Structure formats: structure tokens, C-alpha cells
Length: 163
Image 1 (cartoon, rainbow, N blue to C red):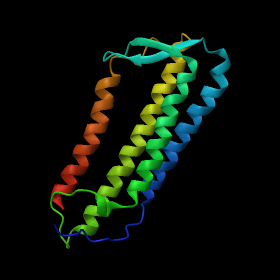
Image 2: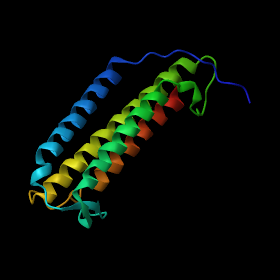
Image 3: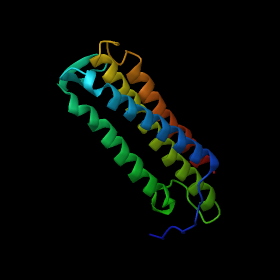
């Protein structure tokens, strides 16, 4: 198998903007968590069913789990984003390698930031549910979550096939 060319692909302004937005949302959620932590009951939502209703309760220290996972994903995907020559492509050629790498790098950036924003929103809702301000994630959450993630993947795959 032929080795893929290594091309230095710089980040984009749009990618930097998405990074800034997701970091701001993430930090806002963390501040909200720390501010509300003392007011939280001992039991907080630990899991939701497909309809967005709480189906498991856990200790309030579990509220730090999603931010930890989100931060690990964000850091790991930020590192991965810098090595687009390691991704798998469907129709990579010497002529379209730069365009494919730019598309792949942006796809990783978009998915990374979507995940962090979605995790932050889930944790925000966890706090609201624990405080009695909300009933759950809502029945719309699962379809929206899946549409956002798979819609983004489909969008970038179509772009990959057109290049």
C-alpha cells in the first residue's frame, strides 16, 4: 500500500472560531457546575433513556465525569486534527490530497466541538434536573443529537467524494 503524502495543513479561521465557542461553552458550564454544586442534592441524573427521561440517579460527583470525558475528547481530537495524512480517504490522489486533508481536518474539528458543546449541554441539563428546574433532556434531544453528529459526518463525506 502506498504511503499517503504528508502535507502541512494549517488550521482555518472557522476552526479557530469553533474552538473558541466550544471552549467558552465548556468553561461556562464548569463555572455553573461549581457555583451550583453546594445547592445540588446528593442524587443527580446519571443516565437518560431514549425519550430523554432520567432512568438512573447517581452521586453528584458524577457531574464531573462528562466534563472530564469532553476535555479528553477535545484534547485527543485536537492532536488528531494535526495529522490528516493518517486518516482514511475514499478517493485520495496526489492531485486532491491537499483538499482532502483540509476537509478531513475540518471534519475532525467540527465533530470535536459538537461533542464538547453537546456534553456541556447535557451536564447543564443534569444540574437543572437535579435542582428541579427541568424534567429531563426532552424527547427532542436524541433525534437532534444524532442528526447533528451524523449530519456533519454525511456533509463531510459528500465533500470528500466530490473532491
